[in-house]
Image 1 (cartoon, one colour):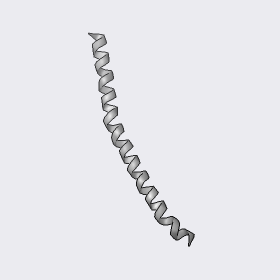
Image 2 (image 1 turned 135 degrees about the horizontal axis):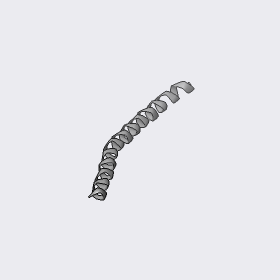
Image 3 (image 1 turned 90 degrees about the vertical axis):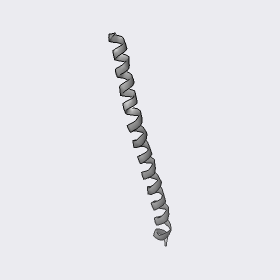
Image 4 (image 1 turned 45 degrees about the horizontal axis):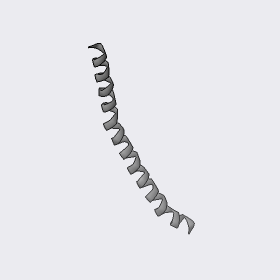
Length: 48
């Protein structure tokens, strides 16, 4: 009986966890290039 009650809760938690991971990866993929290009621009300004 206990397993039957835990299964849907665990499934819900896993789904929301996977969604959270996907969102974090998406944000990282957007922010990482921005930071890299920002640092590159800063270095260009220093050289000039």
